[in-house]
Structure formats: C-alpha cells, structure tokens
Amino acid sequence: MEGTFASKPYFMNRDNVATFSGGRWCDTCRVKCPFDADYPTLQHRLFAGSTAPQATRSVDDGTRNGAETAPASADDIGPVPPTCDLVWVHDAALSWDDAALTANPAAAVAFVFDESGLRAEPWAYHRLAFVLDGLDDLFTHLPNATKLTLVGDPAERLAALAAKLGATTIHVSEHPNPWVVETAEKLRLKSRVVIHPRPVFAEYTQEPKRFSRYWEKVAPQVLGYRPKTSKRMHQ
Image 1 (cartoon, helix red, strand yellow):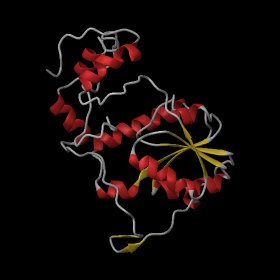
Image 2 (spheres, rainbow, N blue to C red):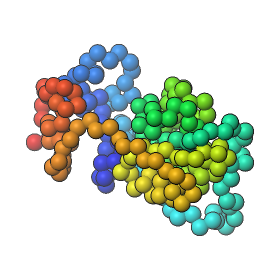
Image 3 (cartoon, rainbow, N blue to C red):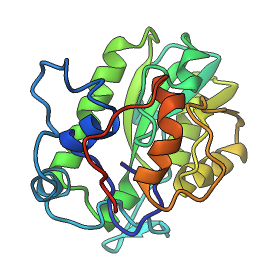
C-alpha cells in the first residue's frame, strides 16, 4: 500500500486483514488469496526483496544514454474518436468507483506508465504484473469506449492525447501523492483540469502513528460495527 508516507513499503497480509476486519471479508472468501503468506514472502513477491519499491522520479532533461528524445506526440496512439473530456487514472487510484470515472462514463480514459520514473528505479515484475492486472480488470468493466495505456512523461502524454481527442477538460481524482499533484499542476498549463474529491470513508483528526490505534477508532465508521480482534498487533 502506498500513501502511508513511511520510509518503507507498507502492506497487509491475509491474517492482518482478517484480524482488523473481524473476519468480515476473509471468513467467507473462497478464492485463492494472493496475500495469504507471511510478510517476508510477500515482500519478495511484490517487490523482489526491495525495501523501496516506489521509483524516484528524475527530471527528464531531454537526453537518455546520450540520445536525443523527441517531444511527446500523439501520432503513435493511432486513430481515436473525438471526445469532450479525458480521465487520467494512475497506479495510486485504480478502481471502478473512482470519482473521476463515475462522473465521466463517456469520456476517454488513459493510464500512463512514467518512463522516467521506471528507468530511475524499475519496478519488480510482481508489482508491474499487479498494476497490469488491475488495469485489465478496470478497463474490462468500464463503459467508456476509449481506454488507452501509454508510456512516457505523464503530463506530456496526457496533454498530447487531450489535444488529439479535442478534449476540453482532463479529470483526475484527488490524491495526496506528490507526483499526482505535480502532474496535475503541469497539466493545468495546457488544459482545464478538474480534481474530483475522494470519498470519505472515515474521519480521524489525531496523528495516527500506528495503524492499530487508527483502526480501533475508524473501524466502526468503515464497517458499521466494532470488530472483535483476536489479539493486539502492537503492544
């Protein structure tokens, strides 16, 4: 899981989910759970042992390996039908219920792999596969007619695509990820950008510090009841 602002990747295994949800999801689940393993095993599966899976995005100065790179272009995208709007989805928000998507069922939808970031620190195969599976599932269930996966600088590729589509507005859901915020600001230089507020599942005004303490307070808001835990995870 991203967005915890920790110095290491934070994720849960099946036992942790079952504990903090009081078994709500896991007890009745009959599918083979990809997170049913201990943390060292999952660390290797998701990040190939890396403790810093998120790429450090570098500034692209127009050269890579001494070669000139051409400006972003939509010529390689192929023919696309004209549209009035474009929705940008990213790896921090892949959901059928994404606010920007649900508000624009007729808009074009695009995901962009950040080439500069991936060159700076390539993702582990398992993480890449996880995102690709998520994209495949998302695009399969979306009613939107135009759905594209691109590679390059996200701001440049999205701006070029919007121009080719004749899109008047680019939509994205609110997210605290600094890269998402920075990309949205770059897009504002060329297009009208609408930031859709994220739904609020729970409110917690204090400094969380530990997930277990945070979950004790917000679980009733999220689940509708206070789950019973078999043990305390952090004493």
